[in-house]
Amino acid sequence: MLSELVVHNFAIIRHLEISFRSGLNILSGETGAGKSILVGAVNLILGGRASQEMIRTGANEASVEAVFAVQDGRSVGERLSEWGLEPSEGIVIRRSISRSGRNRVFVNDQIVSLQQLQQLAKELISVSGQHEHQLLLDTEVHLGLLDTFGHLDPSREEVAAVYGEWAGTREKLQKMKRFKQEQASQQEWLRFQLQELESAKLQPDEDKLLDQERNLLKHAATLHDAARSVHQSLYAGRGAVLEVLSGVEKNLGVLADIDPGQRPLLSHLEQARIHLEELSHSVQQYAGQISFDPQRLAAVDERLALLQKLGKKYGTTVDEMIGRMEEIRRTLGEGEDASFQESEMEKALEALRRTYLEKAEALSVKRHEVALQLTGEVERVLAALDMARARFAVAFDRRDGGGSPAEPSFTPTGIDKAEFILSANPGEDLKPLAKVASGGELSRILLALKSILSHKGEAETLIFDEVDAGIGGRTAELVGVQLQRLAGKHQVICITHLPQIACYGEHHYKVVKQTDGEETTTHIHLMPDKERMEELARMLGGISVSEKARAHARELLHRARKEN
Image (cartoon, rainbow, N blue to C red; front, side, top):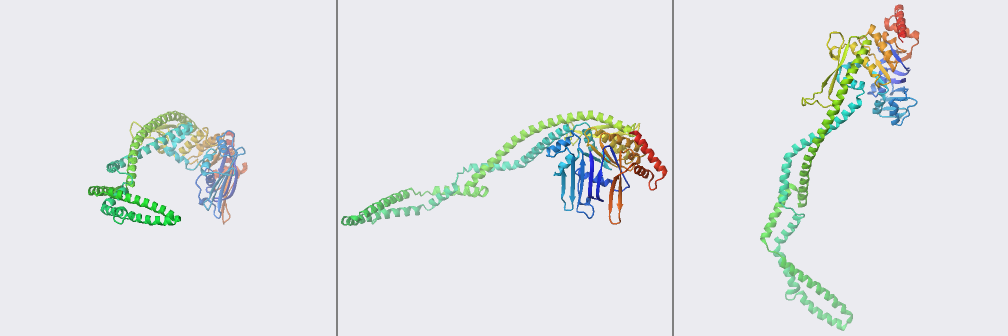
C-alpha cells in the first residue's frame, strides 16, 4: 500500500507531502490544478521515462519519494531479499533527476538499476491513465490481459523460450545456407587451386635448394677449373706445396739435430702436412663431383619457372605456397563440415518446431477455456456498471505470417490472435471494441477488467486518473460503487471530476494551484467532512455554489455512506 508520497521540485510542485490511506482515496480539484502531475510523479516511481523538462523552473534537481507498507507473504518481499534488502519495515523508493542528466534510483537507501525499479514497482502499484481505455482498441493488448486473467504467464514464457531457440536456430540455418550459396562458386575455384598446387608436388625449401643447384650447374666449368688448380698447387703440380714441404722438413731436421729444443717445430710441420693433404684430397673429390649437365640445368630452370608462376598466385616462397595449400584444404573441409552441421541444424530446427507447436497448442487450449471465464466475469461487472444487457466475448484467430496455410505463424506469444468483442445493446451482433464501443463504454470495460484482474495478483495499489471519461449521472454513481467495492481488497486512488464518484471515497483530497504573481505552486490536503461537502457542491454547481448544490452534495454523501 502506498502510504506516503513526497514530491520535490517536480513541474509546478515545489514541495508536496501526501499521506494516503487504505480504501478509496479521492483526488479532486479545478482543471489544471496539478492532479495529473501527481500521476506523472508516480510514473517516475514506476520506472517511467524521465526528462529535464520535469524539473521545476529555477531548480537543479527534482525528486519523488514513495513509501509503501508491504503485506506479509507478498512476492515483493522475496524480490527485496534477493537484492539483499530488508522489507520488514516497508519499502522506500526514491528517484531523482537533475539538469546534468543524472538519474538515480534508491530502494531503502540502496541504489538500484532502472530495470530493477520497473520489476519491483509493477508489483506495488498500477496506474490507469486518462487515455488508457484507448489501449483497449489495440488488439495486441487483449491477449496479454487474457493471459494475466488466466495465470497463463508461465505457459506463455515457456512458449516464448522455445520460440527464442527456434528463431535463433532458424536464423543460423538461414545464414549457413546463404553462406553455402555464396561459397559454392568459390569452392569450385578453391578445388582448382588445390589441384594445381598438389600437382606441383611441392617440397619444403625447394625453391632455395633449386636456386643453389642452378647456381652450381651454371658455373660448373669455373668451379671445376678452380678446384683442379688448387689440387695442382697443393699436390700434383711441379713445385707443389707438399713437395716444397719435404725440403722444409730436411732443414728443420738439421735444426733439431743441432738444437734439440727446436724439435716441436717438426710436429707443427707434420700437422700442416696432414691438413694440406686432407685439403688436397677434398678439393680433388669436389672436382670429380662437379657435373657438366645441360639437361639438368634446363630441368632446374623449368622447375624454377613453374614455382615462380605459382608464386604469383599463392605466395612468394614455396613454404608460403604449401601454407596456402593447407589453408585451402581446411576451408574445403569446413565446407564439408558445414554440410554436416546444416543437416544437424535442420534436425534440431524440426524438433524445436514440434516442441513449439506442442506448447503453443496447449497454451491455445487454455486460452479458450479462460476466455469463457473472462466473458462471464466481465459481463457480471458490466451489469453492475449500467450495462446489464451487454454481451462480451473473446474472438480467436490463428496468426498468419504468410506461411503455410496448414501451419500458423510462430510468435513469442504463441499462435493465437485474440480480440475483445462487444454487443452493448440487445439485437446487435458482437463486434470489435474499436468499431462499436463509445468512450464511456471503454471506460467501464477498463474498470471491469481492472476489477477482475485485481483478484488475479494485480498490484496492491490501483490508481485511476480520470478513467470516468464519457460517463455521468447514474452510470457515474455505479462506477463509484464499483470503485468502492474494489477498494475493499485494494488501496484505490482515484482522480475524478465527477461528484457521483467522489462521494464514495473514504478519504477525499483537494488539489489546489496557487500563484503569487511570480511563481505557481500546487498544494494538496485531506478535507474534513464540511470542506468535503463544499467541494462536492462545487463539482456539482460550477462557478457559484448554491444551497441546492450543497443539499445535493449532502444527499450524495448520505447515499454513499449508506451503501457502505
